[in-house]
Length: 120
Image (cartoon, rainbow, N blue to C red; front, side, top):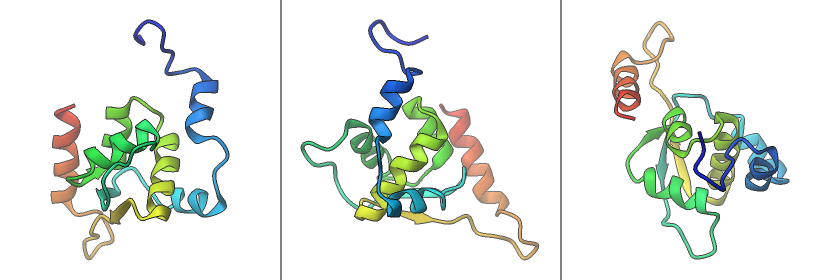
């Protein structure tokens, strides 16, 4: 349940977070999967959207997309869009999950993501 006066599931509120974004940001958003690790490359600046600032502060240490969505309390799709904007602007960089020789994700990385999710 949302705090009084705030409805996180309100489509209008979610639209204001995403609005109409540029083609480059939308294309970049498509490159994020749930376990993509995101790292800040910049500090929040005055006037920046509050969710963008929260992402930059949280990603001072690598964080998976799914972790960010859970911590922000926002849908993964919306978080991916915001990350796409930050990636295009140089605010974040991406660290892909390492694949084993069989093409599967590295079990150590998956364990780290699982520990992070349990800590939420």
